[in-house]
Image (cartoon, rainbow, N blue to C red; front, side):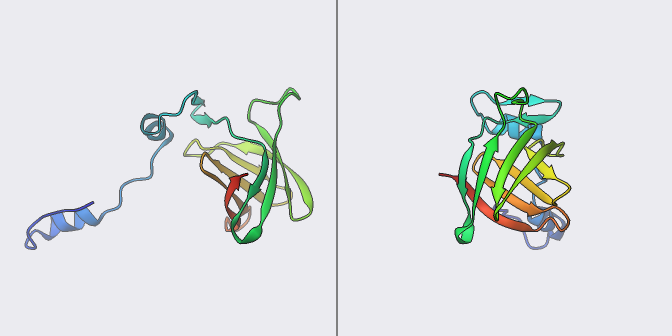
Length: 134
């Protein structure tokens, strides 16, 4: 954002440098018009793909979105990563974006329409980033 203000107006200048607030689910819903986008109890329900996601540095994650098993409502996924298979349950997120966690094994999968991110559940640091469906 460009701000054209006199240098004598430091209060206005500092206001221009203030980053915008994080978007909420309501803002995302209004700004990103996605066909068939639904929100249930403030949580976005995105129709995302199962399959192998290729990530940075050659990592890959096999994501299976459980459907046809009576739980195809977006509440569970199964991932294959680092030689293991993990079952993650959806958690509420403040942004409304899909966030799945396996508390026992300490894994968190964040689903975004344009990429996925696998986090260490304890430190919240990325284990695999920029993961995109093939």
